[in-house]
Length: 106
Image (cartoon, rainbow, N blue to C red; front, side, top):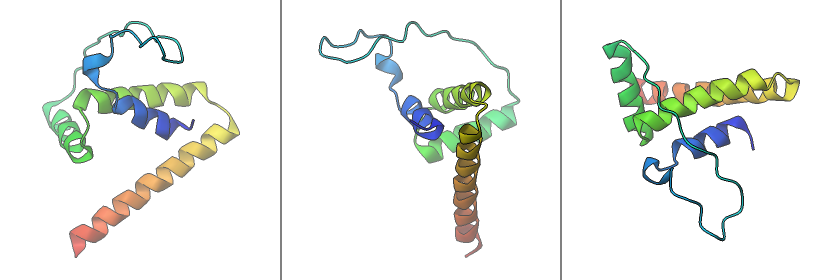
């Protein structure tokens, strides 16, 4: 699974069920308990994050968690393939920005 798909899956995971036990027929292992940490951000930047989360229709905490986990995954993956996937992901991001810019200018 590439990093972007993994991040999207984690972002969409409902916070309400994260600590519930897996059903008996589930395949896999429980991930363990979550740890909550606070992060200080300037109000203006946090407002931007809230706006982006709203546009993406994801909770703010899920968006931020996805960014942190993506950064950690990138630190662990120092392979050429991983670098190529990150460049491709950034190319997709640039395409989205260009499309938004085109819409804004019309």
